[in-house]
Image (cartoon, rainbow, N blue to C red):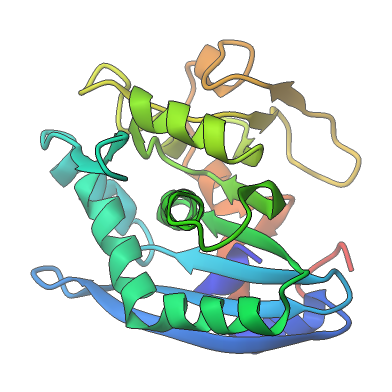
Length: 259
C-alpha cells in the first residue's frame, strides 16, 4: 500500500491487493509553493481485513534529498503540544494533505466502521508523513492508539529524541522497514539537532526476495540494523520486497508478486 500512493489511480492498487476493498479518496496538494512539488495520500478500507488504510506519498522522485538538504540546517519545530519536535517540511507536507480532506475522510470511515483497525503507511518522505499522521491521530484521541498499525518503508529520521519517545509511548505497533543500504533512513544525520528514529526497525540486508531473512531491532536505533552498516545505494531506496516503488504509478494490476 505504500507504493500505491505513487499511483494516479490508487483504487486499482487497493482492489488488486485486497479482496473486499474500496478507495475513499486520493488527496493531491502542492506541498512546496516555491518548488511547486506535490504531496499526496489516500484513504481506503479493506473489509476482508477490517482495516481503514491511510497511505502517504511525499515529493516526487528524488526531491526528498533536495528537501532534506534544504532542511537539515533548520531546527526542528515543536509539535504535539511541545511533546516532540519534527522536521518542518515533513510536518507541513502532512498537514496540507491532512487538512485538505484526508482528516474528514478518515473520520467518516471511522464513524462508518468503528470496529476496524487503522493501518498507516508510506515510503520515503511518505513514511515520515505516515509517522506524523499516526502520532497526530493518537495525541488528538481520534482513534484508539492500540488499534493503529504503523508500517513505513525507507523512512527518514522524522523528529528529535523527544518525538521518538512519544511515538514509542503512544504507538505499540510501529515498524520501520529498511532495505539493505538505503541511504534515506540515515538522514537527516543524528548529530543535527538530535534527530532520532522511533522503534522498531526491520532490516533486510539482502534483495528482500520472498523468504529472505531479516534482522529486527526493537529499539529506536541500533548498530545491529541499518545504523551499523556504512554503505549507501540509492537503488535500495527505490526497491522494496523485490518490487520497484514506481511500478504502481500507472496502476497496480499484476505488479504485486505476493497476491
